[in-house]
Length: 493
Image 1: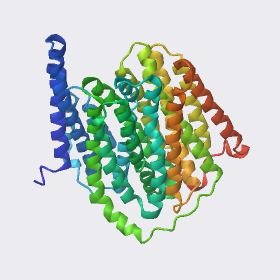
Image 2: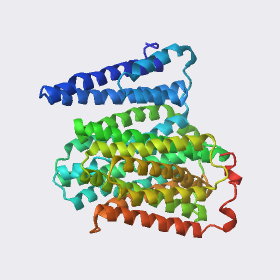
Image 3: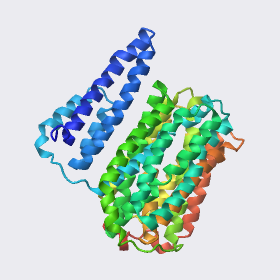
Image 4: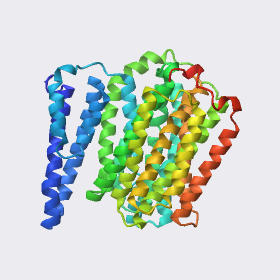
């Protein structure tokens, strides 16, 4: 039994089943659909394959936690889930090095990184499909924008509640409640068959998922040495980027073959797996830290904290605009939801590459506020250019620039928040931080949906608003601190 449950055995077995089911889907089911007029073949095999993919992702996650092998092995296994025949080459390479992989204790930070991944893949799987799914249920364009924004509207209140709860009780109870309730909310999408019912599900989903992220990031910030918190922000950003790659691609492809509720149900399975790991491994850590927990402190509105909050709002204002505008723009150009998913995954791929560079070497001569300004400016310019792009090459190039800006901005605003808080009030600070994430998404989706402008005009409005924020933030920075090398608390980033 111990040999069967060895993480290497589990990931190799799950990979073999996944690789085989992918070949069956592409080599048998799809030809039956297109050449033998049997579309049910893809529906059945695609549904089975979707569940296998989720099991395989859980096996990869478990192997990363227990083997702690180089992250490139996990990326190789992940790529094998989508590239035919790649798993068989990957399995041979892993098998040759079997003796190098030893089972190690689970590092709690990596488990929390995985929870961060789940929270954001929950978000990113919604982007390519939610507005069009709402319209498929009979919603108008304005109501579809409201459906997209409802998640973030209630997510705001969940974030605030999470921050207060985390400062008082620690991250463990907040994370377990958030994971359990979010998995339940994801499963409830299958019950929504009208726009009104979909709004109700989005209301619930947004609030309960809002509990997860502030608690996870507070845990990571407090568990990281002061001199490495900048690098930790880049590592957590890497997991956000991986979610940005896999989430849209997975939902765009699987929704076109199965259904949107099925996509969300598979994400729920991932949440349930992480819930079990959290109960097993984080419960003891929470009990040990309960006696040492400090009294919660009030927030002090330092310049770094205000800058961080401004960046949080406009980062997700931009993401909300993408969620609402990109599927419409792509559809107007004659493409389907798979193109939206591919474009969003491209920006995530670029972001991950830059996150890795920052986690390893960083941009030590560029202070966080300058990374903030450069990243947000790139994202703003990308928004303006998206509305003017009319072919796949132009869209891809602009989304690559957007990914670079995202990768600079996300770690910068996290580092600014850490510099502007202490352990006693960091949970509350992260609660407000991610509440502004949610508010930004509402403004970027539902808010833009109220403006009587074409899609190209809405892209331009989004980009110009972000450039105004860049100018305002730079105006608040003392001249001597703009070009100085980063030092002090975050030296060695």
